[in-house]
Length: 208
Image 1: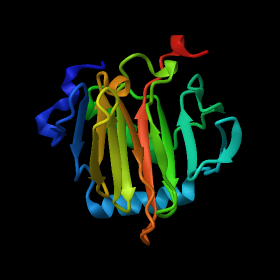
Image 2: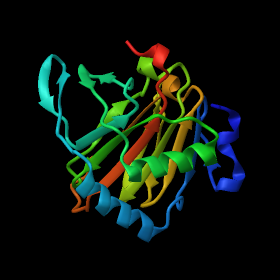
Image 3: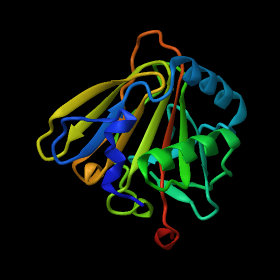
Image 4: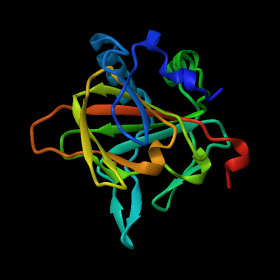
């Protein structure tokens, strides 16, 4: 079902002007109160952990908490970290079902990241792991504090920033992961926590 219909204007998603990419954004996919309620519920209900990854040959704690959920085959590896999925919770499953319906795209796993304050972040990277396939559709829901999200066009080095609002939906598809790195900048400002949910699809035949 991974079709071009995911950019349906009826859903309020609008394409961002990024060359060599298919990225769309809707700031009010959830109401502000729905998003804040969901943020609080997920804080309490998910099995959060702070993992260690290999960075330039050294083991370092990642600057955020995370929780990986999905179908049993959805093992996922990045930066030397092998993640075994927890089952979907009812809250995560309800969001997955809504995204599947609205975007006409299958999702069977989700990475939840909890950025506890401005000192938590994620460096520039691409979600280009083999398990995700050559042109993955990644649906990203933001809950809580507004944060700056950056895209870097690899051929030109051009950088584009967007403020991800509470309750917003960002969808990356096509060759976005081939031509861009993306990340969440840290900030020294006093800022509340943010939870980000990135829904993906991992085909069983692509798993190691």
